[in-house]
Length: 98
Ligand SMILES: [Zn+2]
Figure 1 (cartoon, rainbow, N blue to C red):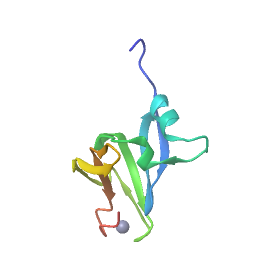
Figure 2: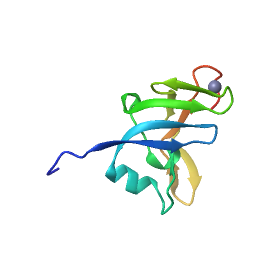
Figure 3: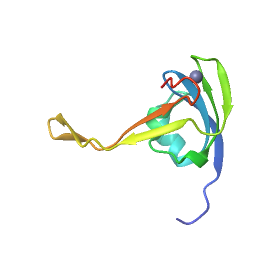
Figure 4: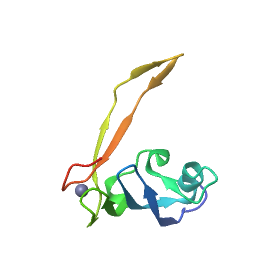
């Protein structure tokens, strides 16, 4: 690490809503696959304090702070030697929508 990476607030899309979080340029590059949209699932694990607000499609509400985040470590065998080490979900704290 030669320099401090700037954190920039970005809109991250999920299946049931979206969230705004501060991510680094590295994380952004990793997550956006050549499209001007960033998907939550591509960013990987982010700490709750990185989120600034989130929006839920189901209850159509915008809430400050992080969605409820739950992570599991299923170590699930997906076949062909691939093991799912970590699985994460972001849920609305109001209606529990993922
Ligand atoms: Zn909701």
